Length: 296
Image 1 (cartoon, one colour):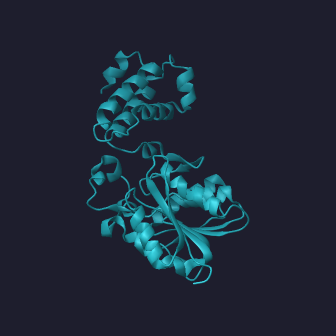
Image 2: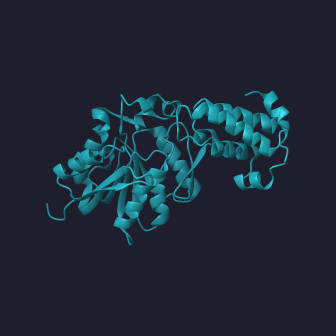
Image 3: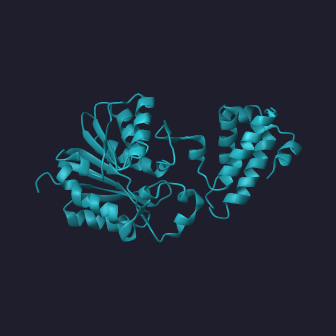
């Protein structure tokens, strides 16, 4: 795609969207059948124009300035090369919160909202102590803080750069009470105990061919890849969590779509009760929870 293509298309909003979507269709769908070229083009054009997607639909014949059209072309090329839309925009919506994201953190994904949903269902009101392990952008911790103002929430991450993003998001969203702690999973929490421990840890096996997708290659591998076929971090959290759970407390873990049985088995072997897995909106086993017994 060249600037000539944009010029020859009369450079209306509608024409730009057609050109951008077609270019992304050609570039993305061969490697990702679930790609959304039309949506991506809308998001990128709205970003270039500094407006919302609704205006694109209400003003399809508007002719953007030449430099705006050129910026849109640049953004389309970045997306076609595999850069995630969230990194291009610098933001991503999660649980109705707009979060800043950078290449220092994973792009928050819709399936991770299931962890938040289950935590709120397991502890529907009042006070609670919750820990979000490997917080990244702070998505889980900040969603819980917004939904449950009375909860005490701590978010941990081994990455100082990730915690900087999470702190910035907490400040921007007006929820500074979320405590941020740097450390490897539970190691920085000393002897503190919680009613809920949640984590979306790395769970992709190093040999998984999906890691060769340009989009995943741009995300922090520390937050994606784990040893033991993708189960190492999950096993470590399951092993250590009982030392940090109050009696009757819950451990909630996101995992890969084929890992539910392995995670459930590890929870049962560690002594957890009420172990059950839940499916995401696509019908894939995506997270598993277990309760630490009130009486060991």
